[in-house]
Length: 414
Ligand code: SF4
Image (cartoon, rainbow, N blue to C red; front, side):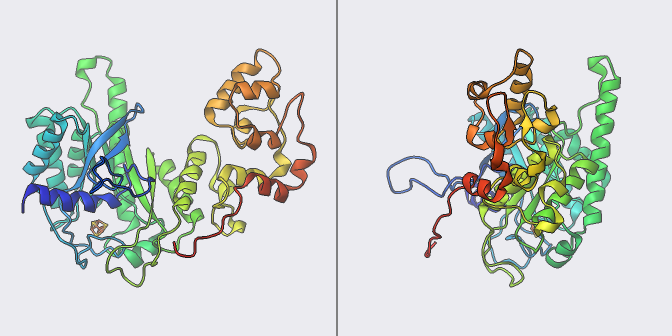
């Protein structure tokens, strides 16, 4: 099989991994129109480095052969898809060629399980090793990590890669047992724990060593991440967010990526026939942000008495505010930072600007306009010397109707 043909298969097979996807655009391409560009192409995706730069990555699988039979996966052993496998040298060459042409700034490499976890991990590590040692490649490398692989292999992976990720895939043990019987949550968590320990130990050693030249080499400096599939099993948003909260707290993950399940060819009857609405994935990302940066807990965002699902029509912060009118209005001139962060429409940057501005004098509505605060969303929840929301908070249902997007007629043929 020619390299280009393999690339077509293995870049396409990698598209289901959202750990670094730049998704969301509607499908569009210029083939046959004489134009240029496509939103459907696979192979190069975007990711963010720890310092916030957006980098383009060659995103491929080493192989889409896999001895496992995860029901939701197009590459499972029982799947009827065309298979291909790169040699490690081919991946190295492709990465260097694309890099030299300035198409990419790094590599995202994953793989189906060939023979066993150790063998697969060895192959992945060999690609990263060769790039770093044989070719002195200084670009970004993200390696998918096989949870069953030996600790020495995880250690080697961290020496060469910027970021490692282990996909937890489904939030509950029960979901994994039903849909990915070869995987176990304790096994995945043990591997994540191992990585956390190595990352932190490395950071400590580097901090303790004052002489720059003597510092030990970095270990996965961009940390570890994971992906959870949304909508393949019956897990609700509360279970998903509880699992994420646990992963952030116990394993110091940098990111949890949520990937709406997409129906695959010849799918098992255990899987839903339709993908969940993309907005569910979007709401989970918003909720995830609230967990990490806004001081919210899972109980705030998805309380057990609300059925465990996020409101798809409004963002989770607004939903929380409408459930808790007793916490509002917030006095923008006096409230502490933690409470300002809970006001709908106020992001971290706005809160910082408000805190800085109010030191110079009392803020008024005009000041919010100057600070580019979204007034429609924020004013019902805040109090200023020239503004009080008065009765609006007494009727949260009415307020919700005013702030939610107007209902749309569903398309019968969509
Ligand atoms: S181990 Fe990975 S590649 Fe193999 S079937 Fe499961 S999800 Fe797919």
